[in-house]
Length: 98
View 1 (cartoon, rainbow, N blue to C red):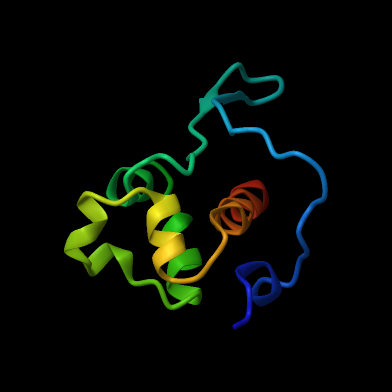
View 2: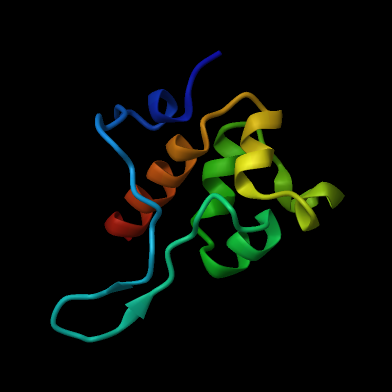
């Protein structure tokens, strides 16, 4: 099965991954919300709209699944055979490009 990072054309970063936190945009002082693997799928999708296309590209139609209201991103990724860190990386890459 193809990984999400392969589908989006970029590879995994090596080393320890830290849990994402709120980040401050340079020169503006604005905080942006960064989703984490322990968030419920529905909460994460409301906080970051870039998550929906990433999940759909992987065949995860979580926005239409009743389980998304009680499953974390990590649990949903595990059920579908994906590494949650790959999903977060793909979402953050879209966020940075957008």
